[in-house]
Image (cartoon, rainbow, N blue to C red; front, side):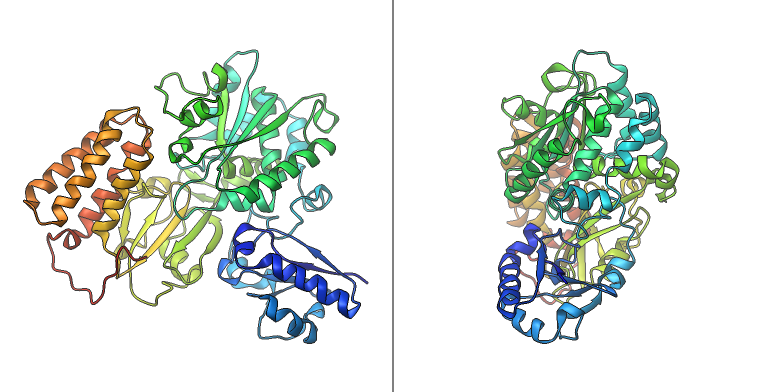
Length: 524
């Protein structure tokens, strides 16, 4: 009898030695004459536990971790192929508190299946959304997505159904679906994990989008720093064509749809949809003036539905379960689930998919286990490098688009970066300005020049040079950048800067005295 052992092929697990562990398990099994099949699955998201090895037993999958190559011999000796006791044994995977408390909808198959096996994907419900969509009219598909309340998971939170309806209603000889996989926000990795752990769900979402708006061709614009994703996606695209998921007649329906993978060159601004389109067309990645919007005049001047990975990955479940089931999750205008990513100074970093409405405190303490340093938490940044810094007394805020905007913050792509009480928030504010200066496409003056001047002003504040006047100047500069920049890169750089100034004035030599006992250089 063959025993199946799962070892993640996820980039995070590989960076921690998963490849060596997989080879060691295969070699030890061969040495002992035991029939073992090693499956390279995606990560469950418990990154502090990687490499997490799972064994299929009669009782279910049993998890062991974190496993190093040196642990493999002792695992075999302890009978881990039968779920035997070992210091690294964590118990039945499905019962681990980290996973049991989640509502895995988009990530339901990640870590469960062989990412490149179409048969495995279908056996776990893959393709059900597409089958449902093939029996619906384009308008009915768009209506279902609209009713679900799905909003763009790339950061802007724009209603997906409205975007798709605009593309559907705009006549053109050719329309496109573009997937924004240029995941560049600090502390984010959900797109990468989905692409590496369940690529066919992304492809399925893109095919459904094509059916909905009348597009026959799609593009995935992939971040250049994701070589593992590129390898997985190229293999998945080839398999999808062979399996009928892509091609001249999707699932024998007569509807055509195919996808091309394109790799970006590492510019953060190309996460902005119009700069992405410029880059995809082979031009310099610069922001376009709007209107017109890409849904009307997008890629190569044609109507284009441009969504990010998790947005498109949410579509199959909406079509398979119905919009009401998706709408039932979440709060207010924030419906469904979002994969939140815990990073920075946190004990248990990883991916947590839960419905909107949970609090930051729940994510950071119940899932994240508090700071990795054990020191008091001082600040949290949600939404990437352009997200506002929230102080420790704001952790009860629910993760909801509108609730965050009311507090001058953004949910964004769901990245949560934690800082303990050694962080210097003035240096973090300076970093935000410097980041904008480095990453600006240069098209508009407020972003190109304003960010450079902003770094200089913050430096003068830190040097104690006429602080009140410099602070007033910094606020005016932030107002100009917010009001006059062409895109969110310049327009939102003020958010982390002003929030640091508001909540942590002592770090700028202003306001209340510094009562902390330690500080590190920009510590996290």
